[in-house]
Image (cartoon, rainbow, N blue to C red; front, side, top):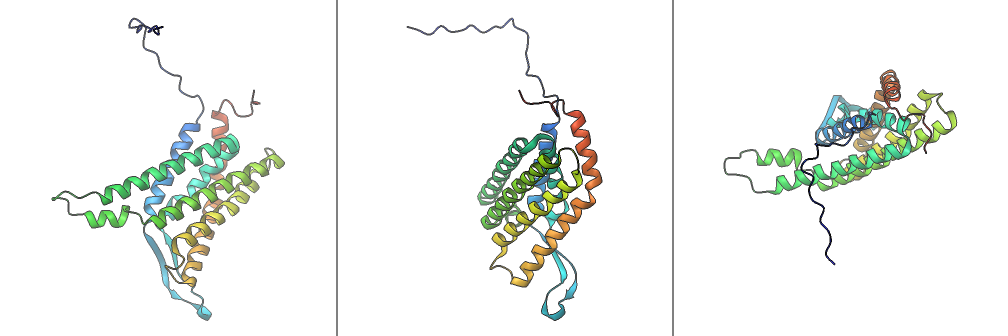
Length: 241
């Protein structure tokens, strides 16, 4: 028995899918963009201040990386996702960011390994900046997953207790836990055995304090962004069917 083929409806008007009315896609796009930019910028280590080691403990210089400029903002958007869309929505965004990060890392590694054209004079520079060391890639991905999932889980768990009140507490509480996991996992996996123990401790402590302070300073902005997204999201507060 032959299957009946459905003729093409050439006289049918053009049709399109309806765009979502909420802003989830915009928040996720910004979240992934900040994550990718931060991962590239994190290749460069940065230090500030003179050498100062009272009692043999290195306090200065302050050591961080280029990702410090934008990466804390991924936690701001992570808070927005968890607060407005819950653990399910935050998990979807986190996994999407993870997949995009893997794609970017594999692409950069493949391009760096590809034979350069004869006229191309920047192969070593490209490989040095974007040909990520696999250990750094693994450290970044593991730290990201641990930090973002804990950040979302803590925020949602606290919201179930506090409901719509005490937003500041769950924003800071989730950051304290999430950033600790992210910083410790990334720095340990990436640099244990590469730098001295005092330098590694400096890197972890400075990075953690800095990220928490940035999110604390951004609390007024986070409040406004969350309020805006809640107003623009038609499904917010509507019980699931």
